[in-house]
Image (cartoon, rainbow, N blue to C red; front, side, top):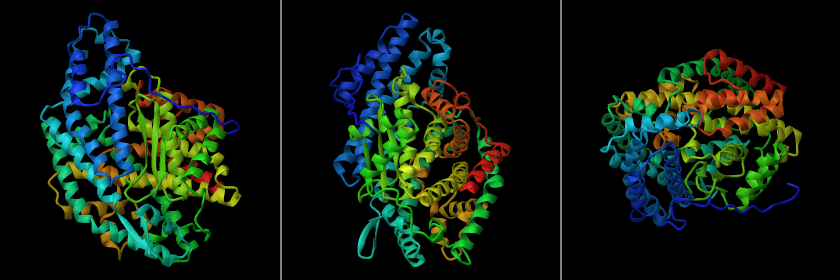
Length: 573
């Protein structure tokens, strides 16, 4: 950016709760009691009560956010784990019954139906759903789930391998899967796979325990299975399990054949009889892996420039984050795997966490999380904290659209025209490749929770069947059957955020449509995208997609239209 500006951000001034509130139950309970007992005698009283409740919830969310962030930045610290667990076990369970009482107070206040529907419809719909689902006996179980599922990160965060006498995290080692030397790729893949398989039984046991706890929650709430419970708990008002199956079918019919064709081209370009699992990430041009930046700091700087070139406002958001130390991007041992953007509810800014190993994939992770970050800033001033809680179908639209919109400014990362084209080709291939994987993970979870009594062998058999139906990544797994059977354990969402995955597929289709609009009219396309994000969750998913100038649709016809657009763009490169 031409003129660097320093913009230190601070939490919003509190109107209701003390500025220096110490987050422990002894100081929190009086606030919940006051909200529970306060007289509400008018619509104005009710709106003030909602604002006060929102302020308390935002403070708690931000406190929890920092405990989670610090724990994932250093999974080896028992002190940080204890601080996280204190909130999960000593605060959250005690909040739950009060939240239920406050929801009841709102609905029974006598003034809820006088609140402006335009503003409160979505919020009230969610409150009523929460009341339907709430069961006192589920509080300790949900607490146990919260604590147990963190074990996944502790197990996977401590995994490392030694290659050429040097220790690497699995993310760092995976960089070698792009090496043009096939033997080096094979060695890296075999070591990573062997390391994952070491903990296979431990992760199987953890998952079986989580599955049992989740099933109990569903039964307590009056559902036959956890899948049906989660559709309600995730607030899926806009689609059904049957729509998910229609999505799976459309992807299998329209996307898998394109990817099969691409796999044949890959096989021919690499000059191999069959694609082994370690042949899937190497660049088929025979050139070394793309190197868009040298280190984490350069990734941040280049991303600020890239976002600024799209629109000044976007670049300034990342600049603000950098000035306030709201990034942790380098991979290191003891750090949890993956990447995320965590909104800080009071501060109105987010924190971006990722595991950069200086690869092209890290560039796409950064612009993805950067899309989430922009969304956080755009919704920061919405009146109630709940208005900012977007469903994932909208949140992931923000991030996945940014991956595609930003492509026209990737020359910031690549000064070589051929590298830039390769990067764009890789990205568009990844966009298509994401869709079958999403369908596989989603269909697998539908099966797991609607067939609760299954054993490990049946689960493996089903995983292999579904994975094969969607092309099995078009690799030959015949001599790697154990590795193939275990691939599902790589997916953090299955362990930590069950059923949060189909959203990536729906949002990916939406992102292609946003990008198509942007290509046709950059100014209008970008404005529609930003206008949609500003809504937070004050409209239905369908209305938010319409504001972005796109459809919330996953029928075969629409999928075909979008796939053909992506394929045409790939052919231009």
